[in-house]
Length: 77
Image 1 (tube, rainbow, N blue to C red):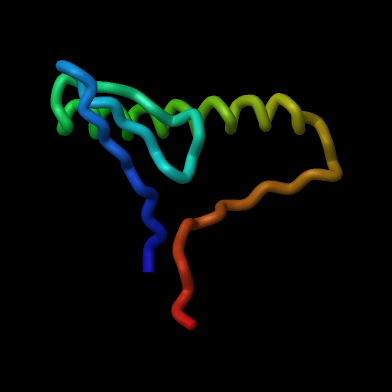
Image 2: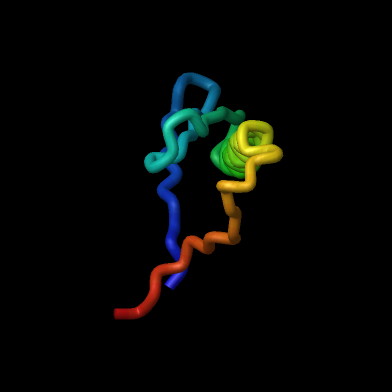
């Protein structure tokens, strides 16, 4: 089973505000829910890439650190 995040949309006048319930700081807006959804996907990707870059700078040249892929998939019990 794939782990899903929860997108929250709030109408604010002419704008639709959007954020991810599980990841503070990933938020955006759009004129429509569809635009806000697309912008939210972009915001999440930018957030992840920014954190990845900051982490890589912090661990560059260290031999006491390892990295590996980590999938957000729940295993069946």
